[in-house]
Image 1 (tube, rainbow, N blue to C red):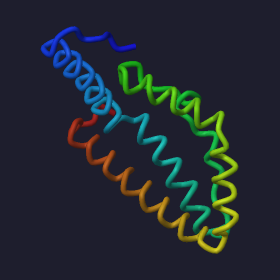
Image 2 (cartoon, rainbow, N blue to C red):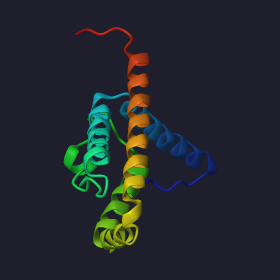
Image 3 (spheres, one colour):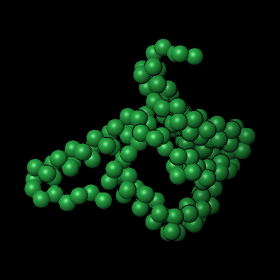
Length: 141
């Protein structure tokens, strides 16, 4: 929980602290091997379904940050706490059945969904690889 400010200066200080937590965590994730593995998995899943089973979406529902785990230097602060609460609320809601109904109603568009998800995951993977090469120009292999 975020502490309650008693003055404008303290509120600004709290805002800067929380902003630094979020930007530091995003910088730790961007260009990480952890993110590259997740994105490569999504590229493979959507790419193979696009090539071999375009009429169905891959089952990526088991991929969650809680199951995979985050790198140890990631702390999103108050924004992370709010995201956890939102994820718990989504898990307790009817979001999954609504998503299944949406997919069933748009079954003819599944190949387009596969192609778009493949393209987005591939671009994100290339972006992450670019960040990795800029941060580590020389390998210590």
